Length: 236
Image (cartoon, rainbow, N blue to C red; front, side):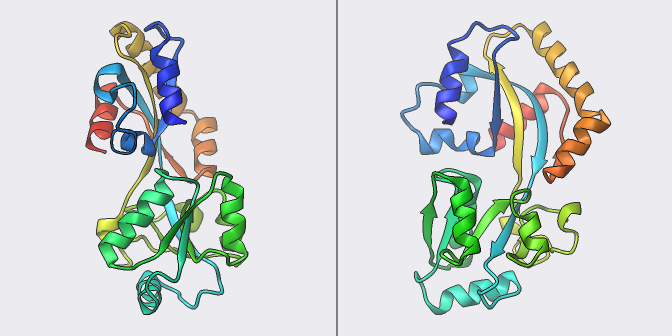
C-alpha cells in the first residue's frame, strides 16, 4: 500500500497538489520492498511531522501475567507455543513483535491479518496471546478489562493510559519506539511551495481543534521544519 501511494505521488507534477501522508512503516520500505520503483531520499522531500503516537503491549486477560517480565517468563516456558498478531507484514505491530523477540530471546509465531478488526477480535477471544497495537482501537477494551495492558512502548506515559508503565519503566528501554506520522511531497517541489505548506500545517497543528483530535487518537501533535522531519525519516 505504501509503495502504491508513493508511486502515485511521484507520477504527479512537483507542485502543491500532491501530498503523501506516511507513518513509521514508510521508513521500512527500503528493507522490506527492495524492488520498489522509487528511492525515498531522491524521489521525495519531507514537509512536516504531523504527530507522534505510541503502541501498547496488550494480552488477553486469560494470559496469567501482569507485567512485561512475567510475559517473557511465560513465553519462555513453552518456546514457540504462543502467537502475536499484527495488521500485516511491515506494520509497527509486526516490527515491534520481531524486535521484542530479538531483545528478550522469546520465541513466538507472528500471525498477520489483512483485516485489522479481525486481529483485535482474535486477541479478545484468546486466539492469539499478545499484540503491540496503537492505543485508540483498544483503550476501551483495556478500561473495561477485556484486554490487559502491560506497557506503553514510548519513552513517556500517555494520558489515555496514565496508569500503564512505559516499556522503559518495565525494564526494557531498548524497546522504546514511536509511531510517527507526517507528510512528504515529490522531490523538485519549489522551496517557496514547501515553505507555504509547512507554515499552514504548523498553524493548523497549533489549533485546539486539531490538538484535541490528535489527543483522542493517543497522538502528540507534531510540527517543525521540513529539515527536522527529514532527519527523523532518515534516522528511522
